[in-house]
Structure formats: structure tokens, C-alpha cells
Amino acid sequence: MTVVAKKLDMSAADVAIADFYSPTELTDGFHLVIDALKLNGIDTIYGVPGIPITDLGRMAQAEGMRVLSFRHEQNAGNAAAIAGFLTKKPGICLTVSAPGFLNGLTALANATTNCFPMILISGSSEREIVDLQQGDYEEMDQLAIAKPLCKAAFRVLHACDIGIGVARAIRAAVSGRPGGVYLDLPAKLFAQVIDAQHGAKSLVKVIDAAPAQLPAPTAIARALDELRNAKRPLIILGKGAAYAQADDVVREFVERSGIPYVPMSMAKGLLPDTHPLSAGAARSTALKDSDVVLLVGARLNWLLSHGKGKAWGEPGSKRFIQIDIEPREMDSNVEIVAPVVGDIGSCVSALLDGLGDGWKGAPAEWVETIRAKREANIAKMAPKLMKNTAPMDFHSALGALRTVIKERPDAILVNEGANTLDLARGIIDMYQPRKRLDVGTWGIMGIGMGFAIAAAVETGKPVLAVEGDSAFGFSGMEVETICRYKLPICIVIFNNNGIYRGTDTDPTGRDPATTVFVPDSRYDRMMEAFGGVGAQVFTPDELKRAVDAAMDSGKPTLINAVIDPAAGSESGNIGSLNPQSVIKRK
Ligand code: ADP
Ligand code: TZD
Ligand code: MG
Image (tube, rainbow, N blue to C red; front, side, top):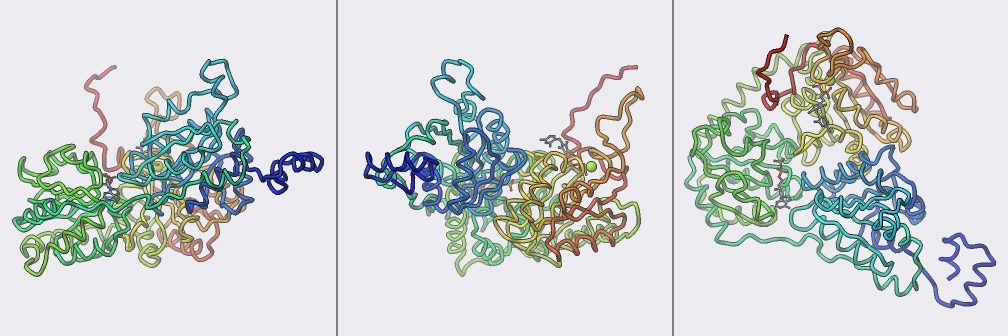
């Protein structure tokens, strides 16, 4: 009793009285939540404190967990989401009720969309009052609101159910297709006291949270038949393949099969982008002219033009094989002639075994076509990356950062923006798996600082965050968090004075245009305000030197890279998605 009573801040007299009446040791909701997380190997929480979870954070820290406090829940949620992607354990985001919960919910929905495992744990108000809508402090029916936006949502009402609640949340987040889970913990739960032994017994250590899912032998045989009959086979690696951490077997399969591959954005580096079979720089040709396409942890969503249309060449020219853990992903956009349902490690191993000694390699003519196209495209791009003049454009600035990552392949690259994103994705080669973290399936702005912080915390590696000036603004206040925890993060702002470009004007002459910001802003001074290092650079050489200094020092650094405001194009590479008005008004 005494130990627990002290944690509850009882006076000495209260403790004596409690000891007299109750010989057994007690525990409470706070401690059971912490014990349940720790029992399952979860050691880090990202969140924002407040009623009713302030003490939960404090106690978790006191119990040895890493608890990182953010300035806004959305950034804490993004941190939790990417922690999930990097570690295959659910990242935990902890928020207060209604507004804090809603701020975290965007990140939860984004995690679910991207198939990242995370658990949003929010404190909530009194059920009796919420359900009668009597106006409690931060009243909101959070469970109902979360449900349609995540993979699963649970509420725990009794302290003795915390163990099961946490276990269900963990299993739901990481098993099958990973995703976001909401766990609703009402204020009253935390202070509920139960017998400590009973409490300890109620905890559940989740066994085999994400069990291997073996593909059916017939599915493997069907897929191999398709590959054997292909004249122009192509592999597309998606972020599911990066998440799966089956790096060796994926690499072996690509190399043994000799089939060219295109990495999706966050799968870059699974094999080095400089690999002879990489078709990254020949993407258009590879998509258009291939005849059999093997998708590995990549969905045929908008990022792959839904598997149809001009990007994929002649209608009917393609046969798709798809490896995915989610059976319902098959035929979501076009017919999948060889669905392979299972986890990527097991499926790719089975394909590799099936290639056997009889596999003759991919047709040489096709491999050569892709190689030639890739080399031609790389040669065409090269001079643009080498200019060393001011003002910088995207290409010349990215040329410098490309060299930084080549020299520091274990650094993690976080990337968001429009031009800053699309051009960096093409220009900066990645050399190791799970080193490129970006806006993902939704193309969402605001992931930058949350991703950067969690990447540094979870991996201990240096982080380079390449940010459009608009993109950075969505999570910019977290530079204080970066300074507070002294994280080895170097932020480079591509400052072109606005969204896409900094040159638009309001035709009426009244206000700034909708896409422009205060010109020549000094974002570097934001970092200096909190004790970090700030720098402003005008040329690629200056940029390279400043980034190298930051990465060598490991100090929080923000580099304001001045980019020609006229250099960008509307929406980067995806301007065609903008609807066009046909109405002309005078
Ligand atoms: P990208 O954006 O890189 O194309 P997507 O997010 O569209 O990637 O696709 C990732 C896919 O990977 C999802 O359909 C998901 O179900 C799948 N996936 C995630 N983890 C695994 C795994 N371990 N085994 C098999 N498939 C997985
Ligand atoms: N809000 C959210 C949450 N996500 C979004 N994707 C957008 C708004 C729309 N949007 C984009 O798609 S890119 C972008 C916005 C606002 C910013 C582009 O400006 P930037 O990049 O400065 O970050 P460039 O280099 O100037 O193109
Ligand atoms: Mg910009």
C-alpha cells in the first residue's frame, strides 16, 4: 500500500490510515495504463499535457518512459505515426479531451490512410454528462467521432479492463494492414483504485501481435507463371515493402529475378537508388511499356494513376500481380490477375524459392531499354543540378542536398512542400531503407516537424528536413520542441516566398495574393529564438557548407535557403489535378 499511496500524493496520516484498513497493495488507472504499455515494449509517448492526462505523462516519465511534449497535438500525432512506420510498434500519441483529441485526430486519420500503426490515447470527460449533453468541461463523444476515421476504436471504463483495452489497441494497430487505433480513457478511470495483484494479473502481454501471413502456394504459382510469360516485367516497391522490414529478401528477389523496379517515394532506398535495376529515373517508360507489373506493398491509387490511363500505355496492355496483406486491396482499381495475399516477407520469400534454378532472368532487351532511358534522363538532369549561382532554383539547391545524402546515407530525410517535395523526390538519391519520410498517400502538409522529431528520437540518426516555406509553417512551432530536446535535426526551408511561387498578386491590388507570404522572411531566426543555430544561404555551395556544419555538430539548425520566387510551378508535379474554370469574368 505505502508505495502506491505515495504516488497518489496522500498525506502521511492518510497513508497510515489506509495501511491500517487495507493490508494489500493498491494500484490505479494511471499506473495500469503505464504498466500495460511498458509490458508490451512501448517506451515512448508523444503528446500534449492537460486535464485529465497531465499526471499520466508525469508518471510515465517517472516510470522511465520517454514522454515528449509537443506544442500542438497534430505534430505529436504525426510523430507517433512515423514512429510506428519506423519501428513496426504502434506509436503512441497522448492528448486531452475534445480539442486536443480533435487536433490529434487528423494525424490518426492520416496514419490509417498510410497504413502506419499508431494509437491515439485521449482522456475524455464524464460519460454520464457527455451522453446527456449536459455541458461537461471539453465535452465530446470522442469515441463516436473517431470510429469512422481509424481502423478500430475502444473505450475502457473499468481499471481492471485496461490490460485488455491496451492489448486490443496494439493488436488492432499492427496486425493485418497496419493503421490508427483510438483508445478513449475517461477521466474517472485514471483514479480508479484496484488491488495491485489483481491489477497486475489483468495486464496482457500481446503474443505475436502481427503474425506472419503465409501466401497460398497456388497464388505463388500463379504469380510466377505471369512473371515467366512476361516480356517486359516491372516491380513496383511501395512503402508497405519498406514497412515490412524484409529488406534482404526484397533485395535478393529483385537481383535474382533481374527485373527492373520503380520505388514509390517512401520505398526509395530499399535498394539504393543507384542500383543498376532501378527504373526510378525511367519511371514513365517503365510504367507505359511494361506488360506485367508486380506490386509489392503499393496500392494502385492516384499516385499510380489508378493503374490505368495514359501513364499506363495502351488500354489492356498490362497484367498486374499484387502482393498485399489486405485481401480487399485486390481489384480495387483494375483487375489483379495474380493476387498474392500475405505479409511481404513471406510472399517474396515464396516467390524467390519458386524462381528456382530454371529462372532465366528478365528479357535482356527490356532491361537494356530501361537502363538506356535511365542513363539518358540522369544525364539530362545533371547540368541543372550543378549551377552555383544566386538566386538558387530548386534544382541547384537540391543538387547540393543530393550530395549531402550521398555522403551521409544513414541520415533520415524528411520532405514536404509542392515543388520542394516533387523535385527532391526525383533528385535526392536514397541509399538505405526507411530513410525517406514524406507527405505520403494524402500529400498532407504539416508532417515535417513531427516526423523529424520522431525520426531522431526513434533512430538516434541525424535528420535533414527539407521543407517548403508553406509546408514548414504547418508545424513550425515545434522548432522549440527540437531545441528543448536538443535533437540532431537540420531543417532547410526552401524559401520562395510562398505556395508554389512567391510572385502572384491580387488583381484588385488590395491584399497580398492568396499564395504569397511576407517576402524575404527570416525563418532562421525562429530557431535562434530558442537557442538553436540559424543561417541564411544564397548559393548551393553555402547551402552544402551550412548543412554539413549542422550535421557534424548535431545541433538543432534551421537554414533559410533563398530560392528564386519565380522558379516553382503550380502544385509542383501535380498541377493537372487542379480543376480549371472555363468562366471568364470582367
Ligand atoms: P505507396 O504509397 O508507397 O505506393 P501504399 O501506402 O499505397 O504505398 O501501399 C502500402 C500497402 O502495403 C498497403 O496496401 C498495405 O496493406 C500494404 N502492407 C503494409 N504492410 C504490409 C506487410 N507487412 N505485408 C504486406 N503488405 C503490407
Ligand atoms: N493543407 C494540407 C493539410 N495539405 C495540403 N496538401 C494543402 C493544404 C495544399 N498544399 C499542397 O498540396 S502543397 C502546399 C499546400 C498548401 C504548400 C506548397 O508550398 P511550399 O512548397 O512553400 O511548401 P513550394 O516549394 O513553394 O512549392
Ligand atoms: Mg514555397
